[in-house]
Amino acid sequence: MEKKNIDWGNLGFGYIQTDKRYVSDYKDGAWDNGRLTDDANVVISECAGVLQYAQTCFEGLKAYTTEDGRIVVFRPDLNADRMIDSAKRLEIPVFPKERFLDAVEQVVAANEAYVPPYGSGATLYLRPYMFGSSPVIGVKPAAEYQFRLFATPVGPYFKGGVKPITIRVSDLDRAAPHGTGHIKAGLNYAMSLYNIVDAHNQGYDENMYLDAATHTKVEETGGANFIFITKDNKVVTPKSDSILPSITRRSLMVVAKDYLGLEVEERVVELSELKDMAECGLCGTAAVISPVGKIVDHGTEICLPSGMSEMGPVTQKLYDTLTGIQMGRIPAPEGWIKVIK
Ligand SMILES: *Cc1c(COP(=O)(O)O)cnc(C)c1O
Image (tube, rainbow, N blue to C red; front, side, top):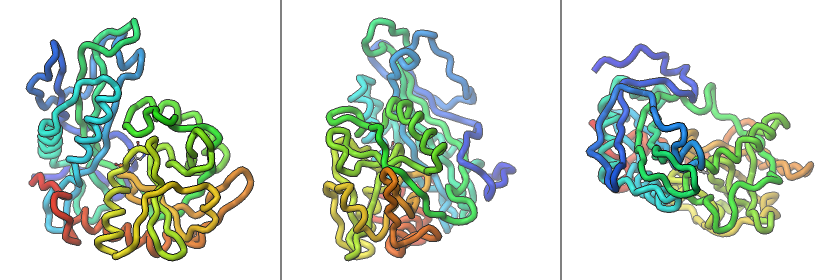
């Protein structure tokens, strides 16, 4: 298979159209058989449910070339499960797990020429999503839906090496108690855009969201979960019903415990504890871990001892081990790696 002529090492995190995507339509109460298509455009009613009332959810995962030249996907079964949870909460009909996994396999195989080579730092990002496609004007769920899954090659998140970021404690909220923070709904991102643009304008890389009810507990950022390393080397991640359950973060907790022998805790993390943490990182599919060097809480600076020039030592070990598992350099736990070919 001849690869596309792409400068893999200089790819950014943007959309590049690839050859094939998967589409399945839901009509008259059932999903059709689904198919791969060359058509990258979606044509829907001007009154479609997604356009009027944001009835849509999505997922994000990656395909990689491993050290021994296989093409693999990392834990796609968890993305399938999470999309089922998102769909249920948004009154979107569930797309069956086996069909989700089959769509992943078909799209990666059909776009094999776009899977970046091992060692390039680039990956093939996969974007499954679902939306209400039929007209809705009175507020109710749409009658018809589309499931789509496309692929786009993306570069390493940190070009020229990882650099710790600076985040601010946000005054605005991401997710209400008993709301939709725990599902991957497009609406959670739409309402975060104002705040991230503002953060960037003020010189911060990200927003740290607190629990909406009391503004005393750490939740997550707009698109990544937190892990903290305490001064006695425990790996701590915030527990809350309004956090999106990151697959990267859940995997890192397993890596910390089973591969690195560290103590792990998923528990409430108070804002007031942050000054005592040794390291902090943001976890998500895009960057795996982005190290946080500084947290600014309304003029009070919390400088993590790991500093602004490199990842903290424990964060680095977690990062190296998880990426080693993903790239096939380190044996993976049972079921974590789905081999496409
Ligand atoms: C997608 C997402 C994450 C990261 O989840 P991964 O499964 O690790 O990619 C974290 N927080 C939010 C709000 C998200 O939407």
